[in-house]
Length: 204
Image (cartoon, rainbow, N blue to C red; front, side, top):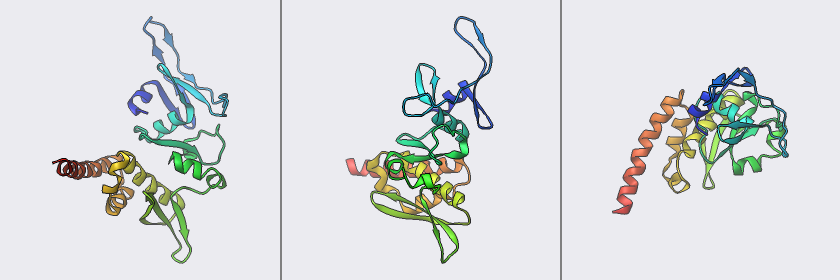
């Protein structure tokens, strides 16, 4: 989902999704309008029209809240299990596999990619790639650890599965500590060069 497309049509006002005022191709004017969050879909999700297609309401909200594209291959999950609670704070990014695996776990309020280290009194962030766990650091709160996980996860989702083995633990920890989207993209550029070099060498 492209952020630039979504922001042209919608805006967030707190937890509410609003369709912006517009003029259609026939010159007809439409005022700003609150988008209903009714959960009217057969599976309990709210939906919204985006140009010529239908998107899930909560994905549009998360895209606007992040102010960036939603990476391909990921889903937006409701932390409390309530599909009509589309507050940005209740929405988190997960893979399809993680979404299925955590169907019961996250309903209890536990966040993906973290656990509490009792001996150290800190939250540990970690991520799994191809069956291997990578340590992302220690954090004071569960939310901070989860945010670190999400940044490392975003880095992974930029690349096809066959390139995941080229991403190192150092890359993932650097992504987890990235303070801005810009610094995360800068890290991606460095990784792009490494992957390009590997691909060129491998195909010679």
